[in-house]
Each structure stands twice: as C-alpha cells, then as structure tokens.
Amino acid sequence: MPETANRRPLASRQSAWAARITRWLASTRITPNQISMAGMVAALIAGLCLWAAGTMPGRWLFLLGGAVFVQLRLLCNLLDGMVAIEAGRGAPDGGFWNEFPDRVSDMLILMGVALGIGQPALGWAAVSFAFLTAYLRELGVNCGAGADFSGPMAKPHRMALVTGAAILSLAEPLWQGRGGILTLALWVVCLGAALTALRRAFHLVGKLRGQR
Image (cartoon, rainbow, N blue to C red; front, side, top):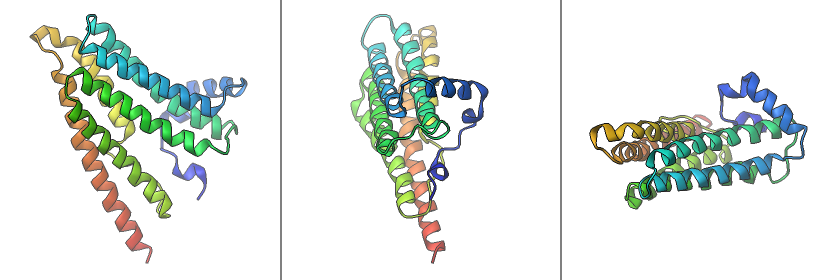
C-alpha cells in the first residue's frame, strides 16, 4: 500500500502557507526527522507549561505558552510529512520518526495537564486510551485494511481540545475557578479516546470480515 494512502487527511496540507514553509524547509539542510524531533521538544515545553500553570505563579502566561506550543507540535507533525513526501526528503527510518514522537508528545502534553490539575491517574488513563487509538490505526495498516483516522478523539481533536481548554482557563478567575476546565477536558479526552478506540476496532473487524 502506498505510503500516501495511510496519511491523515488534512486540509491544511493543501494550504498556500504550508506549501511555502515546506519549500523553504526543503531548501535547507533540515530533515523531516529533525522536524519530528522538534515536535517532541515543543510537546515537552507545552507539557511543562501546562504543569506549571497549576503549580506556579503567572498561570495565565503558562496557559498561553501551553496552548502555543501544543499548536507548534501539530505544525511540526504537519511539516515533517510534507517535507518527507511532497519535497521528496524521506529517509529509511522515517516511519519510526513519524510515529514515535507522536506517542511521546501525547504523553508529555496530557500528563502536563494532569500534573497541573493534580490528577496523574486521570492523565495516565488519557494517555493509555490515546495510545490505544494509535495502536488500532497501525493495526489496521498491518492487517492490510488501511489506516483509520476516525474520531471523535483522534490526535488533532485531542490537541484542539487541550488548546481550547488552556485558552478558556484564562477566564477562570472570573468565577474564582482553577483547573476545572482542564479537568473536564482531560475527562473528555479519556472518554472520547476510549470511544474512538472502540469505533476503530469495530471498523477494523468489519473490514477484515468483508475481505473473506
């Protein structure tokens, strides 16, 4: 199955700004794998910001920083694939760097939220279900059924939710709240990712049975 057949469909990949950045990156010595590594660094900073937002002064600054670096992580996720495929700069170990940093980044960001609200167990549950959705996607590829990117809580949805929750949390002082929005967001990630994993499992079994 061609590599492009198992890429997540993203409208931003067709945008003019993404194409311009891709052309610029392709003209440098920056490799797709290095962009993937940069995504992990962005996720680490995002996770630390979200953790610090619940434990240190300057909460609003850390919430904004967390939101910005979550989106920077997603930008790296977009550009590494575009430089690798559209610009023809792929490497033999590109498959590893396409997947491994995503799992590390999910863990760093979700656990950053969880530690910031003082609920590490909820964080590990969210991480586990997020990993399960990715596992089922890759299992579908390995079984010859193709990648299933369905939601309701796939990676872009999880990161959009965390970003939105961080920004909305800036308004919590208006009602003397602290951490309630991020707690709710983490519960939504947990339940939504569990539902997503179940949905992908049903899709995969149905496809495999249909191949007989």
